[in-house]
Length: 376
Image (cartoon, rainbow, N blue to C red; front, side, top):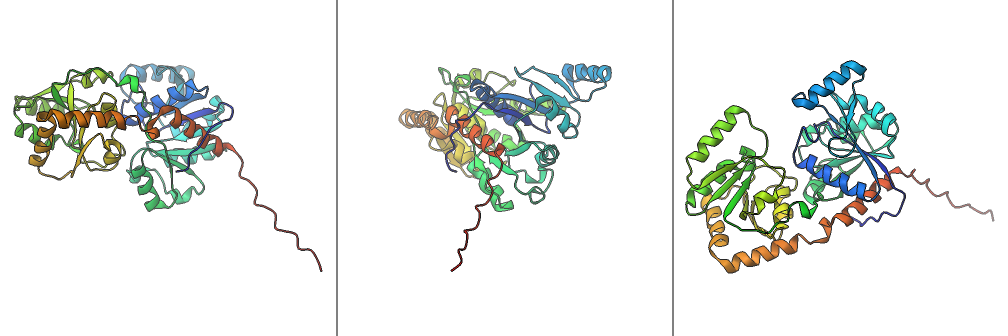
C-alpha cells in the first residue's frame, strides 16, 4: 500500500454498521472503531455512528419508548462520547442518517456491509467499506454489483484474501490501539487465554493446561455465553486444578498485569488478533496459532505454531518461555520492539485513513483530452 498523507480540512465521517455498537456490543470491531473515532476526533474530525439497536437491556427499553413517543425509528445517544444513531434496521434509515449528519464520507463495516453501502450510495454520499474479517459470505451482496466501491482492510491477510476473491485490492489500515489503555507494569504469574470459546481454541487450551500442571492458567471470559454454556465452562475449569476463570473486563490492564505469556490457540481465521498487540505493549510474548492474520499480529513478538499441532508441541513451546529466563527476556524485548513498528503508530494510521477518506470525496478527474492533430 502506498503511503497516504492528509493535509486538508477536517472531515465529517459517519461510521455505519449492521451490528450493535458500544455499549450494547463490545467486540474487536467495536473496540477498534471506538479507538479510531477517538483518534480522529483528537485530530479535529467530526465522527458519528449509525448502528443496529439490539433488543436487550436498558438502552433498548429507552429507545423503544422514545421511538413510540416520537414516532421516529432512528434514536440518537452519546453514550460512547460521540453521537450514535440506532435503529432496528439501520440500512433502511441511511437517508435519514445522512440528512442528520451531512457527512463528507461514510465508512461502512460489519453486519452485511455491502447492503449498508448500497443504501448510502443511493443517497449520493461517498462510501467506503472497512473489511474486518474474511467472512465474505456475510458481506450482504456481491462486490461486482457495486463497481468503483473502495475498500480498506485491517490486515494484509484480509486484503489479499479479498483481492483474490473479488479483484479490488483494499488499502490496509491495521487496527488502531491506544497503548496507554493496555500498557502496565507486570508481576507475571500465569498464562492467560482470552475468550474461551470453541473457535478460539478452548479445547486445545484445556489440553495444554492438562499437560502443564505446574503452570497456572487464567481463562478470561470474552463473548457472552448463555447459562448452559457458562455452566459447562465452569465445570471444565473445575476439573483442571491449575486453571481459573475470570469474568470479562473493560480494563485489560488488570489481565495483562499478571500475564507471563498470552496463549492464542485460535482455530478461526482471525483477521488480526487484537489481544496479541495489546499484550505486546507490556512486553508479553504471545504463543499463537497460524490462523488468518495472527502471524502478522504476533510477528517477532512471540511464536506461531500450526493450529492443528498436537497439544504436546504447544506445551513444549510454552515451557520454554516459562522455564528459561534468557529466552523469555529476549521474547519480551522482541514483543516491546514489535509494538513500536510504524504501521501501528496511531498518528500515522489516522493520517493515512483521513487521506484515503479525503481522496474518496474528490470528484474523479476527467481523462485528458486527446492531442490535436494538425493538418499538413
